[in-house]
Length: 323
Image (tube, rainbow, N blue to C red; front, side, top):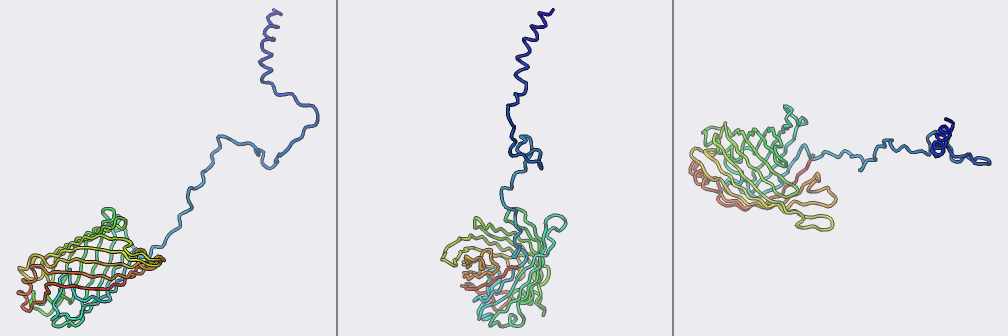
């Protein structure tokens, strides 16, 4: 029995000795780098969670200038036109100037569907105008609700009131009355891809007072960037083509093409960012070649004094301001 006990002790002592604490060394013991404020100083917990540092700096809110409103001063254009269809020199000999704009109202989430609504207006003067065009300025007021249905594409449903201008002139003849007021309902699809350069618009309008037909206006174009690029400023180039057609809008039985047009614009930009592109101020010289379609002859016969010009070359200068 004693032999077995000694055998067990002899086998277990070496194993116990491997886990025993080390011997205390001889001589004085010196403690270094000990903090009594943090009992865990010098020790790292491998399971402790450390929140990672942010990869980028916090986002700083940017200005929303230019996202709500726009005012355009059509300083001067050599012809007065509506969707590319212009009047003869006998009715407007010295061109056209206008101021127009739109404003998107603060509530941009109507019906909880991401729908915005905006108001718009236009005031224009036909220089050297005769007949009914000289009696009153060209006025336009509108309201629209819109929504971005695809990236870079918006759909708008709107109402437009016209007073004076070509619409007012034709309203008097269509209704044999003194008033010059016409009202339309419109559906507009707009596309503008600032990165790839493509832009365009399609509009369908139907008149319910004054002029009671309907019309279509299509336009498509491409924007070339940095056509001219100097140390301080440069020019982009926008080339677009348009086609306007109507069905009994200008007068009963007048249906077909109103006009086709080719437009070239050269928006100016500065490297300081104050003019052009994302800047508040916009300066755009442009030129346009337009040719009246088969509707011009029918309108001339309906009115009797030939208001539509068959071919026009128009030069214009626009100033814009975002707010």
